[in-house]
Image (tube, rainbow, N blue to C red):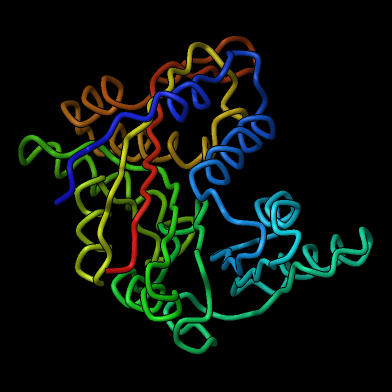
Length: 268
């Protein structure tokens, strides 16, 4: 496993001001991915899990002689992304409907690939990483940003991670999966990538509204499930390692920490 590297610029980009909104936070994350990808202007880049095109709509401007291809399985989100490209007259941002586990592209089609908040939605992360390796050119690389759980220190930590995943699966289906950093790196390296840099970024949340936390309602549901089951120790660990929720009038406020993993991996 590659040695962890400290990227202060990434860390700085993720130190959100307490007044920052969820949309502004996503803009920060978009900048982190593009800065980590460092595309050349003639590159062909694959945006996996492009959604409504938030990342690609910024990325295409860096590719004056290249192009970005966005792929997603959601018809509705792709329709929104396509409307954006038509409205703005963008010609080097192409959209394809498909699954990360079976990418509809030839081998060695792309110079690089990016994944922002999409890895945890893959039905088969093992197949998706193999497919990413296949469609990248020799010496191609990827940059991924995704939320991560803490590495478990004992069996109770393992139960806590399972309880968090369960709550998210209730909302998104059984394929939804959160990983730890070591699990993510292991998946990429098993597919043939060399993880030449990776880092966990942490930012604190101090008495902000739940609506400002990405997927905040699901985190609250995870804690609620543990409270309902009277899993007192898991609740305490959850509040110590992730989030504590409180009610102030009609508003739910949150205190705690959120963690993101960034990985830059090269095709071996």
